[in-house]
Length: 78
Image (cartoon, rainbow, N blue to C red; front, side, top):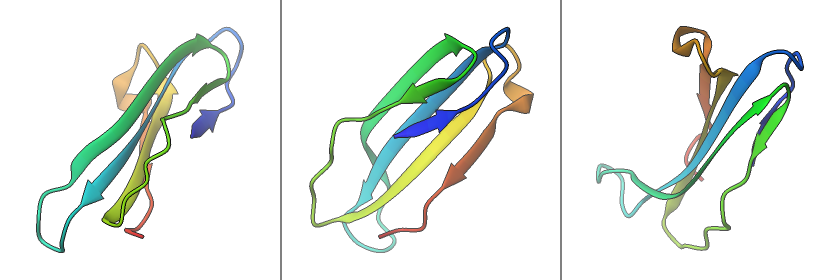
């Protein structure tokens, strides 16, 4: 789940991805993702991912009409 608070007049996008990796050095695979576009605050929720593989969650949020202003953050592998 990822959420962002924004001015109600701003069109906002939130995207969250759960990525998995079988072993260190292998490619990260997107196991689940969700995107929400809304005026003002927005929240995106992926389905639950149950796996024994490494997981990482990445979220991107910001103005829907200005990609340069969006911010992406990721957790460390867990």
